[in-house]
Image (cartoon, rainbow, N blue to C red; front, side, top):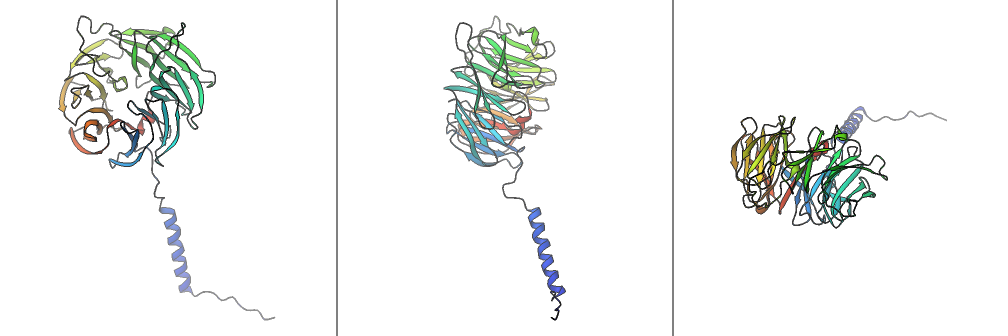
Length: 402
């Protein structure tokens, strides 16, 4: 047999082939999928009249997608998964909807009560808890599957049911909340999710909403049935609850209340809390060491949200009807109103970017979201949105009480 040497391709051809292979491989390595995106830049805008949300990105101030089919969003709120991939939307109709922000779709939905008003998520991201008006109580769901894990009724010893308000997350798998009719504050621990354990504290007359301070130390419930606030020191639970600002409006005739203030919009900045006063044209200033009133700031109308810019230098305030087209800015150093703005008609909500250089405002009656530069107090962008209300950015995923 004769041996035959293999025939090699000419060097020029090898050069062409290798160059093509290198180009294709480098293209595969450097060209990401079209949908690749981080979640820290995202958020949602509630379109309350149509049961849908817009998914937005904040760097370009644009709308990425609209997700429909979320039910009654007339008083909706949102929390986010720890990785900020999913938004959990709590509807007024008792609906709990899990929205995938990257795929812009509903990833799960349950209607778990007849009338609900918000919820929270555990620090480890494993449980989503909903607070209910009807039939009252709280329910805990598996954050991945939305399977019901526990049902904790809000009933008193005589069997009366209460609306639950002011639900907030605490360390571990604990949640704190208030009972409107029963006048109680409760902490439920889901360390064993199937067997929750609840502690009870006095809550005052008709607590209507509440918040956890940014450092996670104190829980404060506003009271509709009396002047004052209920305070729980979460580092010293054995001391129970206490009353602060007792009778701050004593001797004064309160104005008709057109819209209750939202306590999640209260601000703690520079060792002081800034609280919208019920039925008054004032923002109360409270020392957060003594919890004593140290000032009152007159504002244009009845405040609904009094929200601190993230650096704490300013408080932005919006108002109830009929002055809900106005926003005022309070300087926390001087304690004075420095700017009065008219961003649009029906300003229902405000949300700062995480470093505070922009604030997004929902102008419901203009069907528009308006974006302001917080340094210049001028509009710098916006987009159309049908009856927008709540605006929620994924940076909330890293904050206690949000």
